[in-house]
Image 1 (cartoon, rainbow, N blue to C red):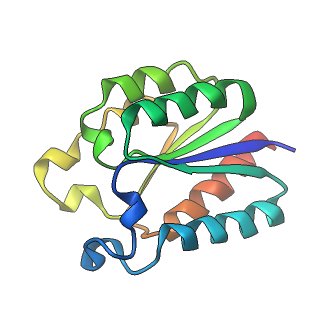
Image 2: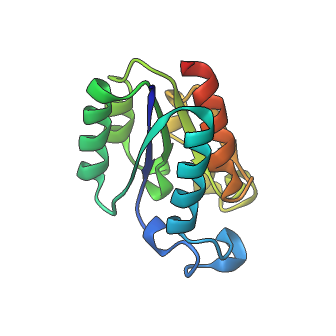
Length: 144
């Protein structure tokens, strides 16, 4: 069964509490539960992970090189700052899908640039937390 890593960056542990007017009231635990249910339906395994630490995200990307066929990543603020995350993603051979809950292009100008997009095969932005499910459907199709 194909495995998809779903990686979440800084502050996403506060999803549902932090700026609900932007990110909504759905928690990261809710997102994980929805992804697990959908993964079962799609016939894929998922590894769901969140960290506020850049190095931990990079370690999971490295782990995915050996264990996953696709990566879905919401790098959060690391999107705009981390060449290190980009470099790690560039070592992964499978599809990479970048997810953003909000439409970053309607927000502050610094959010318009994504290092991760330089590697991503697809980008979901502005679909709310439903973007994770859309990304998972796409990833499952790509690795089937």
